[in-house]
Length: 402
Image 1 (spheres, rainbow, N blue to C red):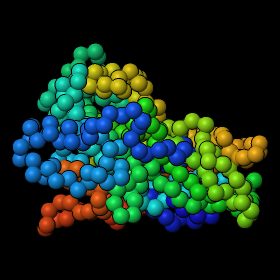
Image 2 (spheres, one colour; image 1 turned 60 degrees about the horizontal axis):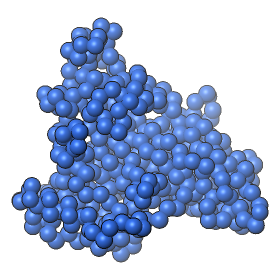
Image 3 (cartoon, rainbow, N blue to C red; image 1 turned 90 degrees about the vertical axis):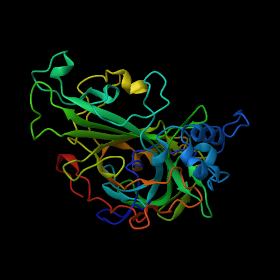
Image 4 (spheres, rainbow, N blue to C red; image 1 turned 120 degrees about the vertical axis):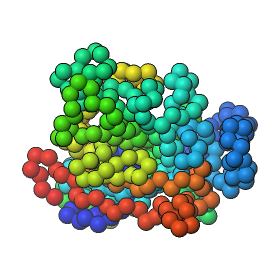
């Protein structure tokens, strides 16, 4: 990730995913200790072969098996024919230092169409359509004044979700799963002193399992007791997850500063990237513009209330704002606590972000042997690179300049 000096605008990034707002912490990417000596990929493939005999030949010889990162990616989490890679670009502003921040392409392994049927214990996928009862829920963000508890009066929406696992390509094949980016960045210390550091963005693990980013989509299908006005979006989309930030190799005005191996934010930053439909269409399959800044989306009217949401049921989604970067801890060695210095440079609330996700390249699997591999058809190939263009500078609320 590159952070230009104040006022600079160039750069690339990826996956609406990765923001600046994350937490730093380099987490191990190998199998968790105590995991059984069973290849979950192989077990899942055997099940898939039984269900879909037509893809047996494709699955039988998976070049990704044995590649670094293979055992850190799940299987049978989504409709198998649309597993693949996505890239994205990002442009963010750190308000504390008034810096424009961009990054090189970021990769993610996307599992398009997470299993949703049956609701109690999903093992299959039903596409989003309010003609199929399972995929139709009340719109959690917008409802007409005439709506009642009667579902026929409500604006209904087709809901579906897609896990995205950040992956850092390894030269020669494979990937570090869970790593968004590791880049040299430029900082400003004490408001005026130039500094550089290595920034690592990653997602956390829970009980040894990497936690993905989740792309949600609510797409309007039924109108209820009143037509949906043209000034209310026909769809809502959100890419969310926890991000860890870690800093190392700090130099302030050319002088090395030892931060130690565990200089990171006190807790993960919460990433909420809403689809920016005013700038273009977004869905997880084709990608599109995303953002995190004030006023982009109103958030949910109350807690999500439908068994279809499973682990998200009962959760309230806040309105859009910039990303809050928590204070840093564990920075420094030999008894020197440099955490306040690092926090003064990098932490702070409401850091606006714009991002653009690229189109998923479907392979029926994640091509760890060559993440840049093209999909599609011979006459219409689809490739994950080049990544989408960097979005324009995000707005700074409150009349602040660049």
